[in-house]
Length: 168
Image (cartoon, rainbow, N blue to C red; front, top):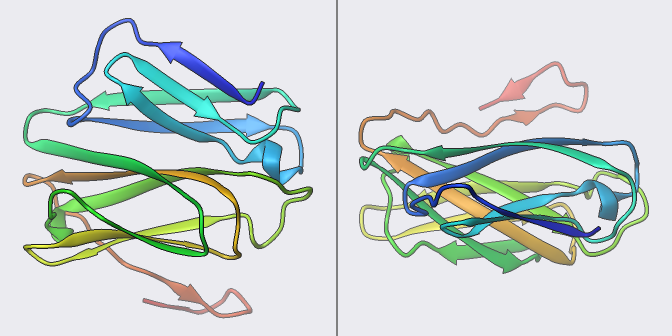
C-alpha cells in the first residue's frame, strides 16, 4: 500500500501534539523508501509513500505536550526551495522543526533524496525554510515545536569533502 490510516484510541490536541517516527524498509527504490507521516485530525494519523513495494516497519510516538508547548504543522508540494510563513511567530531560542516527505517518483537512492528544514524569523514574523537537493515532486509535512521552558541550540554545520572538518 502507499498509505496507512490509523484511528487513535484517544483524541489528541493537535496544537500541543507532535509526531516522531522512524522506520525501516529493505529497498533502494527512493519512491518506496521515503515515508511521510502526519496527524490529519485529533483522531487520525496517516503514513504515506509514493509507490507500494517492500514491507515497512514504522515505530511512532505521539507526544502530547503540556500547555506551555505549541505545535504548528502543515504540508506543501515539494520544490527545490520552499518558504512557508508560520501562522504564529516563534522564538528561535526555544523552537525546533521536524519534516517528513515522500518523493513522487524515483528509481534509486542518491544524493538528491533528502530534505533539509530550518526555522527563520523575528519576534513578529517566522517562516519555515525547506531545501531539497534537487527539484523533486512529492509532498512534505512539517512541524514546528516551541516551548518557553525549553532552550534549543540551533546550529548548521558544513563539512569538508573529506569529512574531517566541520564549520558551524
